[in-house]
Length: 487
Image 1 (spheres, rainbow, N blue to C red):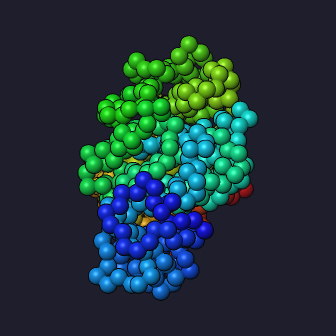
Image 2 (image 1 turned 90 degrees about the horizontal axis):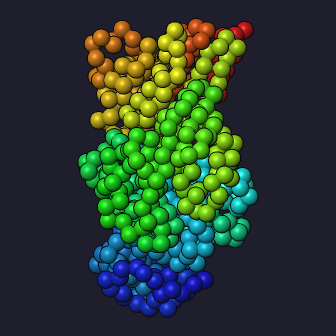
Image 3 (image 1 turned 45 degrees about the vertical axis):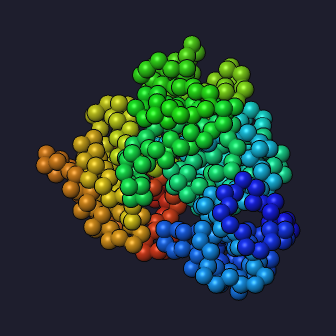
C-alpha cells in the first residue's frame, strides 16, 4: 500500500476533491480489473472513454479516481483528482508507484519508422555478450536479462513499462534498450521515464491511419528528442532528411551516423553478399553477418550507441561481428534445390523498397525474384498502392495476398495494392487471397537459384482475421513447402 499523494508527484493537477493521504493498493485504467482500495485512471481512448466507467470502477472497489473532468455526481468517501491529461498522469503515477525504476538503470530509446526492433535487439545481444545484465522492451519480446516475456505492443502502456523496469531493477539489470513508437509517444506512455539516450533510425510513410499527416507523425517522433535531458545523448541518422529536424530543439548531446554524408560515425560498404557485409567503419574494417545497406545503418547505430555508453571500440567491433540477425528481419534459408527464401517484416513502402533493392544488389539477375506481399487491414490505406508499385517494379514475379486483414475484406485490400501497379508490370502479378496458398504457389513457381521474398509479417506467428488470431509463421510455412517440393 502507498499513499495516493506520493504517486501524484509531477502530475499536472487542476483540482482535488477528498483526501490524497489515503493508502491505495494498485493503479488501473481498465475498470474491469479494479478491486478494493485501488485507484482508477479514466483515459480517453480510441475505442472508448474511461470516464464512462468511473461509476463501475467505484462499484468494483476504487477509492480514488483520476480524471480529466469531474463527474456531475461525486460519491462520498471517494477522492477525485482532476488532471490536465490522464495518460500523462498515468505515466508519472506508474513511475512513482514502482519507485522510478528508469532512474536505476541506463535506458536508451530507439525510434523511427524502420529498424527499431533490429537496433534495440542487437544492442541487447551485444551488451549481453559483453557480460552485462541487460533488458529489452521490443515489438518481438520483452527480456529481463535471460528471461523472456511476451510483447503485445511496440511500446507497452506505462504501467507495463514501469513494472518490467522495476523487475529489471530487482534483477540487477544495468542497461535497457527500448523501442519507442509514435503511438507510445503520442499516448504519453514514455512520460516520467529517464532516458540516457535516444536513437533515430529513419522516417518514412507509415501510421497515417493514426496520425493526421506526415508532418504530425514526424513532430511526434521529434517530441521524444525534445524531452531528452541535457545529460543524455541523441544519435541521429543524418542521411535521413528528417534527422536534422529531430535534433533542432533537443537539449541532449548530439551525434550523427551516415553512409552518404559526413558524420560522427561513418561507414562505407566494401562487400555486400547474402553471407553478410564488409564495412569500413570510421577507420576500422568490420565483417557482420547482417545483410544489406539498411543493416549497415543499423550497425552504425549500434556501434555509436555502444561507444557512447562506454564500451571500448575494439570490443564493440568484435561483438558486432558475432551478432545474429533478428527473427523475421531478413531471415533466410536455402533449400536443397538452392532456392533462397527470405522472410522480412517489411510492411512499409520504404522498408519493402530497401529489402528488394538489397536483394537486387546482391543477386546475379540470372535468377527470378518472386515476392509475396500484402498489407494489414484497419491500418493506413494510402500506403497500399505504393507497396504494389514497389513490389511489381522491383520483382520479376509478385503474388499479392492477405497479411493481417483484421476486420477488413482481404480482397478489397488486395485491390487497393493492385491499384499501384503500372501497366508494364501487370503481367508480373497474380493475386491469391489465402496467404498459405500464396506461399505454396511461390515455392512451386521457383526454380533452382531463384529467390522468394515473403514480406510484411516477419517475426509474427499469427494471422489476425475478424478479431481472431490463427497460428501462422511465414518462415515455418515456406520451409515446409520447400522441403515437400524436394521429395
